[in-house]
Image 1 (cartoon, rainbow, N blue to C red):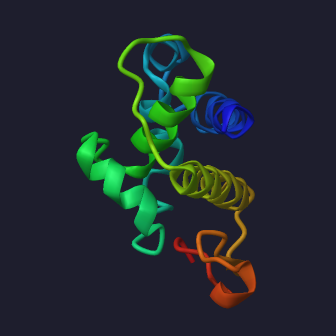
Image 2 (cartoon, helix red, strand yellow):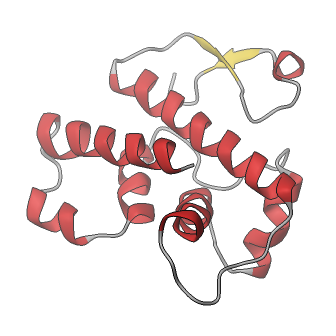
Length: 138
């Protein structure tokens, strides 16, 4: 979780701030992780938690996470930052949030290089069951 989140934020800085220059670094730097991931994914990758990640969808509603980037960032915060009121979630929630973070990272990388082909949906388990589909922005 921690490495996926760090990679998403680093890729976001490289793409949104440096390459595309759509957000100046001072504004980018003041925002939280979920906001940064949303900006990286905006317009290319759906932000909602996929329905097939049913276990992750339950605490998303309970904790009012609202979307996938918020769920991933909040769960990552529970292992990276010591705070009170950490959400208590089932092991499967951790598995699905890691799947979602890796899915976001893969899709963001493919989008950033202009790939428009097919990709495996890593939010479907087993991965072979999901097969490959066109990337959402193609």
